[in-house]
Image (cartoon, rainbow, N blue to C red; front, side):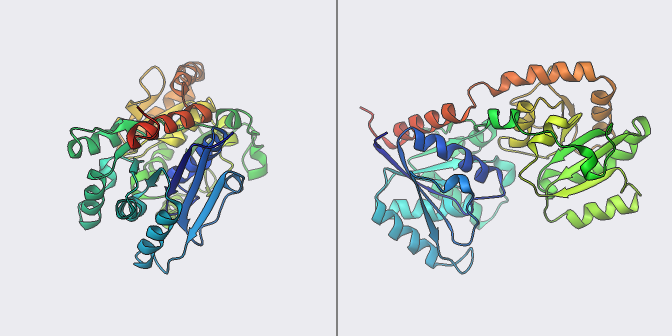
Length: 367
């Protein structure tokens, strides 16, 4: 398909986080619809195979550190040389540096907000990002929380919502693991939690809830996927509580979709989110949900599709898990109801929405 739209997407890395995963998913959809896609990222970041394909040009940026001043000049040279129709940025570092490079080179800058206001501490870096974002051609957001964060800064040009895409077919076809291969009994009740082991993702509250869950469901096993700064804390909590036989830290893995299909309940305990990728993936896997009662989860779920809990209350987490495990029929019904939330989130559909919104915001091919 001939291309009439060129995009330079700037992002710090190509793996590990939710934004990176979205790039991996939507890139193929953009290329399939004729976009000439260029991706700039920090040299040294591993490149997933899905981005090593015709139609995608990768531009590793040399940098001695995240604060290397040469990175800004490298971006200016890249933007000037490519002269893309627009520069699309994700995550704070590239929102600032990519936005400045676009401004210097006279190219439209579109900032794609991937989180919500709770993610950003008060400080110079946040102020600088807001200053760049105010002057961008436009802001796209993947959640109502992200949109609300930018709305006061752009009263005459509010952010536009573009949902996260989902590889629904890939999730539905992921092989279900044999839990015995991981040292769990075949009939284990799987309490699954997936996410970075960090304070905002709040994994510790699920560990604190497990003794209460085990009192009602001795066959329950908490399976935690993820790594991060709280890994030592979590391991210490598990050891001190003597729960090593029922809590399993699996580390980071790209193969969690099959576990979601096997899970008896997926627990999402975050204090805040932008668009909760793990929850959306669990919906596609038809996993019953127990989620923290935060705006990002309320944006896509209600009591007919999930069990909610206060993220600071281990007793409420345990009660929500118990509610799912004790009544699997109602849990399956809620999981079925949740599937309606995936409408319009297929890769091709979201790629078309990206293209449409980029054209409108950047004034490309719009009369």
